[in-house]
Amino acid sequence: MHFRHEWKHEISYVDMLSLRSRLSAVMQQDSHVVNGRYKVRSLYFDNFRDKALLEKVSGVNAREKFRIRYYNDDLSYILLEKKSKVNGLCSKEQAVITLEEARFIAEKGIESLSKSEKPLVKELCYKIQTEGLRPKTIVDYIREPFVYAPSNVRVTIDYDIRTGLLGTDFLSPDCVTVPAGNAPIILEVKWDEFLPSVIRDAVQVQGTHTSAFSKYAACRIYG
Image 1 (cartoon, rainbow, N blue to C red):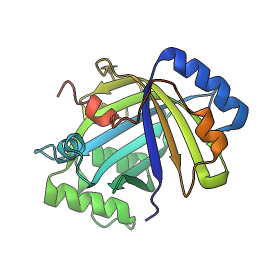
Image 2 (image 1 turned 180 degrees about the horizontal axis):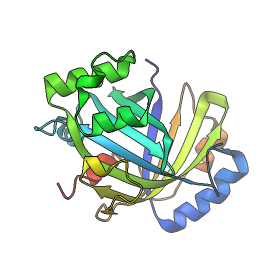
Image 3 (image 1 turned 45 degrees about the vertical axis):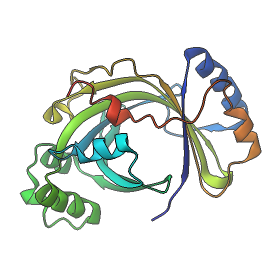
């Protein structure tokens, strides 16, 4: 499992405009963007005790959460992901799944997936059965991503964070979502062994500090 460093900052709209300019000067845009951005839709899982949510809010040192994710309303490429955090470092495991597999998972019809050859699918099915994981909330947002090859740096600006509660609607482009309260604009910086000084300087935003903001937690505002 490969762990990475991660910073998060809550920023203003004016900060975002300034960051766009600075980041564009020293970084490349992610190859998947359309007009500099893309839409992200995720379906997060939790159990009836809200284990993932409470561990995040409480700052538990070692925790994990599962989600299904796709981009720009394109159902031809769907990912199952498990994001882990240990000692402040983050790791993400991924498996490409089919639309049919995503539908089975979102509707909790996991019996037909129990013999999957994909380890991450099998792990999720096992935890649905043993820990009571179930679809909990939809998280939508717009992302502007930038990349820098040395130390595998990735900087993202996320905004227009929206939420929806019905997991079965997750695979519908017409799914109804609503703003996640007063969710801020989020700057995220991720890197491997070191953060190059040119990027460290570019992402500095006066008056901000490292945040523990969670899109999943913010999107649980309504239930």
